[in-house]
Image (spheres, rainbow, N blue to C red):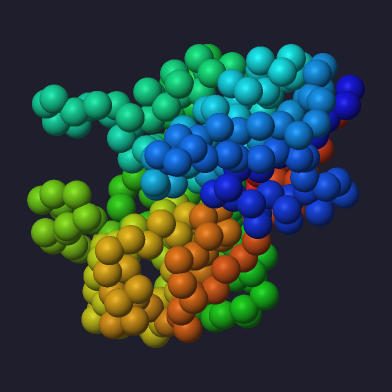
Length: 308
């Protein structure tokens, strides 16, 4: 079955890398905009009967999500056979439950929108909450950035490594890193008064004279992560490196990183960096996505891409 890889505007560079690893060129699609900003995607080639991979992260602005939905709708109306959307960063994943009165469950709404638009399969990476997979009634593959991060950490040849989970929800992720690095693990217990603001923080475990590896799925304002790094150093850590999949980096994020005890922040290119920074290093996850797309197209298992 013939297939094509297309990209939205938010993930163009990553899509080009993925297509290059796969050995194909990106398909021809033009995103037109009317004078008032209205979006109209137009495929420049026939996609009738083909399997499509459409690559687009749904980080803000919300137009990125709308553009993806319109691309799916256009593909369905052009008689594409099977549509897989590749969403390296799944936006609105932090809104995964009703944790207070009168709020939306945004990630469930996004799942409904994608399904209604005509998506047959979703491929993403490091969902903020694993239960989001249950919001979909179509197949979803949640890839893991640890396949890139762990080999990088091993090549650093650090001694006395301790892996830190930034909160109770990150314990399962940190445990995978600790297992493969043969390292101890600590947990940071934090209490929030409101979004993006931590009221209190406590380190559960010993980090004295340790090189701490702090792992998380996303970094937004960087306030919490930087506060955690500072607390780890205060309690005796020799160094703190953070490995975070999605570099949202909004607000005073870059300023917070500059003023923190973080020695290095390693992220992936699921979201393009807004600016370069001396403490930030970007690792490409294009090879993982390229392998996943090949396996999906060939009806092979993608479980070999996961570290367990």
